[in-house]
Image (cartoon, rainbow, N blue to C red; front, top):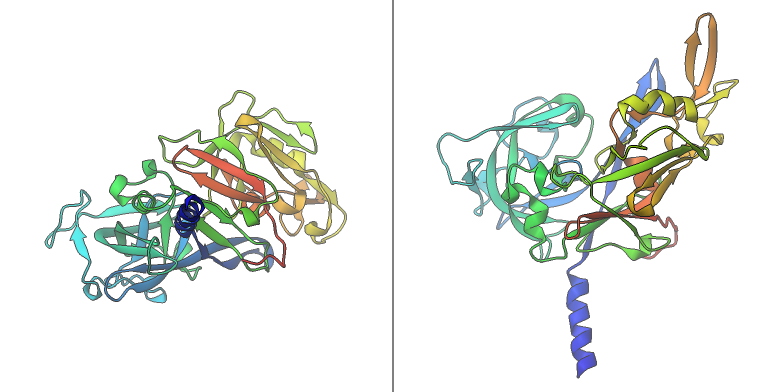
Length: 373
C-alpha cells in the first residue's frame, strides 16, 4: 500500500514539471559586408485568453520582469509583422490600471526598455499558458500590451513578445510577475538548455530542471542581486589562459545570467585588459573558430566556476587593428560593457534558476545528438 501511494505521489510531482521547446533565430551583424558577430533569440509558444486562446511566440528572458505582447491597436510599422493580441476575442480579459484596478476609461501607460529597444503600452489581466493550454502550464497574469514598439530590435526578429523570468524586483509589482503566479502550482524553479548552433533540442523546463541535459550535478551559486531583481552571481576571480587577471578581487563583481542576451558581457573598466589578455595575432583573414586561444574562466562564489574556450567568445572573423602606420589582424573577443553571462555561457552550461532558495545552478551541458527527450 505504501509503495502504491508513493508511486502515485511521484507521478503527481513529475507531472508538475514540463518543458517548452525553443526555436532559434540568428540575425547577422555586418560591417563593410563582413559578418563580425550575430544576434540570436530563443523563443517558444505562449497562449493568452479564453475560450479561444491566442497563440504567440515569446523570448523567455531572465533579464526582465514583465510579459509584454503587441496590442491590436499598435500601428507602428513593426507591429503588423507580429501576431497582435485582440482583447475583444477573450472573454477572460479584464482591462486594468497599473495598480490592478479594473478600468474602461483612461488607462495607465508604462514604458519598458529592452536593451536598446522600448515598448509603451497599457495593461490587461488574462489567462496565460506557456507551451500548451493545460494544467500546470497556465496562470492568471497581468500583461503589458504594447501600443508602440521601436523597430530595433523587434523588427529584426520573428518573436512576438517577451516573457520576463527575472526576479520580482524587476516587475512593477508581484502581480505583474508571471513566474510567481505560475509557481503557486509548481516548484518555483526552471532550467534552460541551449543546443549548439545548428542543432535542435533547446528548451526551458519549468517546475524543476532536466537532469538528462547535464553531464554532472548542478553547482549552486547564491543570487547576489536579489533585491534588484537580477539573477546575478558574484564573480570572485577571472583567469585568461590560466593567468589570474587583476579583476573582481574586491568582491564587487556581479554577473547577470541573462537568457535574452546573445553575447558575453564584462565590466566596462575591465574591457581593455580582458581584450588584451584574450586576443591572438593572425597572419591572414581566416575563421577564428578554427584556432585555439586562451580559455577564459570565471570563478564564482561558493567555489563554482564556468570556463569558455576561445571559440566560445571570439568574433568569427579577425579584426583589423591600426597602430600608427602598422596594421595587424587579431582574433579577439566580442564583449558587452556590462557583466552578463549570455548565450556563450548558456550554450556550454545547463543553467537552473531556483526562486525558492535564490540560487543559480551551473552544470556542463550534455549535447548528445542521440538523447531521447
